[in-house]
Image 1 (tube, helix red, strand yellow):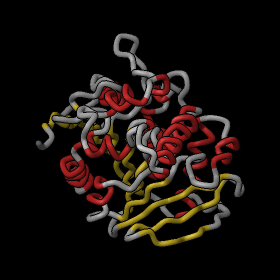
Image 2: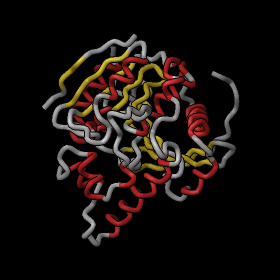
Image 3: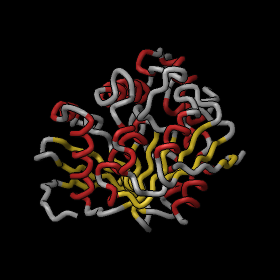
Image 4: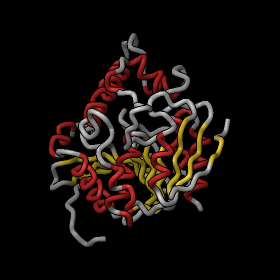
Length: 291
């Protein structure tokens, strides 16, 4: 089922960055490793497609190339960096970043190293918060923002579930409306499966939650409300109607503080609407970015 649309309106530098880039081909997806932060942080970047640049910031459960990114790659040059510490063989690099501001600066260096002066930013959950923080710190870098159930605020009456304390079955039910859907099975291989790849996937997810949690623990409110007024990019907020992790009411918090924002809700989807309804969400994002 396609998304239901609801609209609201709310009230280059020339410095050098050292980068070492290693590139290999994985199917049709390019993979490279870029070193930034004085060569102390290595970031894996997946890319595919052609057209205007689009940077995708993944959620707290790790980076995988999925059907949603494939859909976007039909219209854009999609670049998807792995958050520091989640790049294979570079897990300890996250210790060189002390907090959220370090992370934002690190991503600014990454974009500089990749030669991206401005782009559309798309982010999910924790990645949505990162995209918004980056757009607030460097307004000229973001042409458009598309934020999928982003973190960044806290409301006592509508508390965000602390997913780091949930056992795998509960976490699965909080992320997905249908915990048995194909996307859920890809993200959460059954624990009884002895397959080595399934075990490795579970380990990667736990580590990704730990590394991203460094920047948002204990609650995902790190002062974005003091900086979000600096965002100048038109913004689309996408929320699953049945988000059990971050209540859809948080869309109001973003809209109230952004000068140009609209909300699109997605039926039959939870906290990861781009995974449960990839074609519908990609279509909504593509139409918004083509304005």
